[in-house]
Length: 613
Ligand code: ATP
Image (tube, helix red, strand yellow):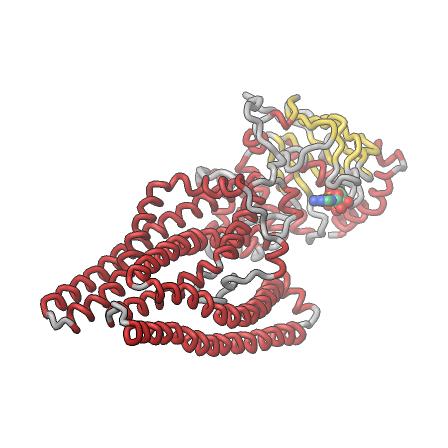
């Protein structure tokens, strides 16, 4: 939010958009109390800021008052001594006001930065606790906006709005008291004309603000285009569909619209200044005129210096009056920003960690699904009455048509989602009763979509075990069949994998994530086999990596290849969220049901392809 001149910046002083008006928060005492709770830890510094604001506002007005004495006592009174003394005093006061101003802005920035620091950290911690559901349903841009712009808005509110309200009120009070001391008639004229003359400012500001808003909408549109087309996948799409020209045209059009708006806005600003300066100069002239009449016609005791002081003080009142006229909007906008942030803070944590979790002393990795039901959305059951037990050391393969709920099933084990009925047990204990940390340390998942950070291979591996020794890394990579590949890279383990690991092939990424899980060394390994077909060399490399793992570890495999399925001790066949068949390959093939069909349509083909290669 901008606290610059009238009508500047995104917020546009003094004006609220229809949207803002519609979403204006209800200012309640609990809301104010909550905002204040963020300021509370810094109350000592705030008292200092208050004192600094009061002092600097008073000091700032003093030279205007002293000018009157310089004129009356020094110049008109022809008193050299007094003249020099008053000039020095005036300079000293100005210097003092500025020095206090420095202290004030330091303290102010310090407080605002610390408050937003607290908020950002609190928000990050809170968001980390949010469930998978939150991240799959909310807009990523929205999350980032709240973390950045909204919190930054709060910082500006603290540094600008709060302090400006305070210093404006003090300046006005001091100026008014000083004016009334000089002459009540002129002071009253001042009080009447200042608000009147701020009206044209508001009108001009509003036009400008509307233009700024339109320009900003264009800007958002441009950012949207950039976001979509300048990403790796966006560019791939553009290139493959030969949409370069169309995208360029779209970009150019918005860009043209934007520059036109910005130029208009800038010129509106220029006209606006003409209006302000002309209008603002009427005030002093009126005071000179009325002052002159009072002195000449009514023999008032007013001195020339007094009139000069009154004019100077009047000049100092425009800014504060203008700001204070906007207080309500500033205040509402600030509260709206806090409300938006609090909305995020108030989102319930769906996957709650146990306060007093059951602690397993030597986790074995027995997994039980006990009549599990699950739904993502209220009216669609995804998993229906799933029951099975996987004993430590054994492996189970889950097969089934796409969309039957295989990935959903494994998401329930490390509690990425919680069951809606029944329960999932780890070593006989409901996973909801275990500590999240212990549970997740004991469950390792190699997903279809392998996520790698934009860092080196080593950094990506160390994510699983930050203190792993070099030998451990190498051993894990050898087991995952990726070590030789890494050595062939120019920088070996220090090769950068690119944005989300895009510099690596699908198979390489998956082997790297197998190595990462091996380093983590969980008691249960879950492997979501990629449906996307890899070339047979990559497939073999992955197969060679996982086969021994299946043999030696408790594992759950979402399998698409016959060789993986055959390596498992039991096969569960899932269809529409239900286990429809279970057993060994030989038995299931003979049944002539869903498995037989999958075997004929899917696995056999893959097998034939393997044999051919
Ligand atoms: P595939 O073999 O294609 O990976 P799958 O058997 O693993 O499929 P799931 O990913 O578990 O299937 O999806 C089961 C069903 O749940 C699908 O119909 C899907 O549309 C739905 N689904 C998956 N994730 C979500 C979600 N986050 N929100 C709502 N519905 C979802």
